Image (cartoon, rainbow, N blue to C red):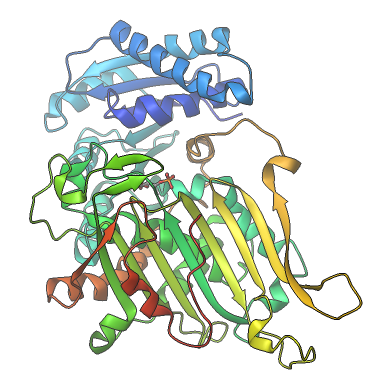
Length: 491
Ligand code: BG6
């Protein structure tokens, strides 16, 4: 059970709070992981009061529980009533010192987690307000701040933000969230690699040909046009989520699961990412943008026709890139990364492509025709792991066929799905920062994409259109140059 704590949510009447944070708190309450003294103060500028907010959250929690019905029973009413009665609302402007004075009076002494579920432009202001009003002082209690993404817009702004935060907080008080780290299957990459003896000996340049990391979505920009226009697929997904997947896949074993030991190893591997030489950019970086098409049997508009989008926008909705990790384990092993919206399937996975058998023993099946050995770590929507290899087809003639061995999470550990935020909020309350990004992790993620940002600024990475509902721009195929390499199909 977490220690007694007040959770202050800035942006408390917003979408993230209703859709993910409060359902996560409800799940923690169901699991009896919240202290009886736990409470939430939602801070926002809107004209709202305790009762109105509680009613709104009751509607969204009912939706959430309804979606879970296949796995669990209906809403646990006594638990929800308890949680709801521990949520209150404080109206305030984030730029006004009175807001922080009112908050200080309301909180008094005691443990507190401040959750910044607000637009990035408020991060600095809020932390400064908390610092100036004494709310970040840890006199016999803890005071921690959870910061959502986007953490900066490039390396320079991420550094500045880190420097601003450090004026009011020590690094141990800062919990930078990347919701991918709350996903069970992302955490499982480390469990799979470091709790088994069979994978790690193969996990290196001697045995691995290349690695593909995919985060494909079928959704478009939805109602987030204004945010997305200034962000694009690269900033939205790569320095954070994709780099975390890469780090989990490629990092060395930490000396312990202590937060800093894990984060040291992540930083090391992210810092080893090879910066693409500008001259080779067409070979290493592709940007795409979706045009009108169909998803399933539904016609969808192109990016330029979406609400709040500049009809001449140069913002990308897809990126594919090739990076190298320059260290002893990975020298010469390309990592191919791709992410995009309005693709043909929703699928996040890491695929480890092993080298082929060294010699063609089966004359009817030359080495290049053998089924490639691929280990796919399925992150979502299916969760688990598949290994693909060759086997003999039954019959008097020796012929080979490709087969798959599959581990499905749901078969072994059937649990109600979580939002991913349960672990993150709970870990922050107990002071475990392992699944949060340290300042140097965030900066290393940005540094790794800096050449791609520069390439766009210099006009070296033009937009390649792709039809919504397809696998993305064909130009991305040219990244996987070399013998028999191709992107795994998006189905
Ligand atoms: C968010 C991005 O961080 O991650 C979104 O801002 C994206 O654009 C989302 O859709 C993807 O998250 P998930 O958990 O659906 O893979």
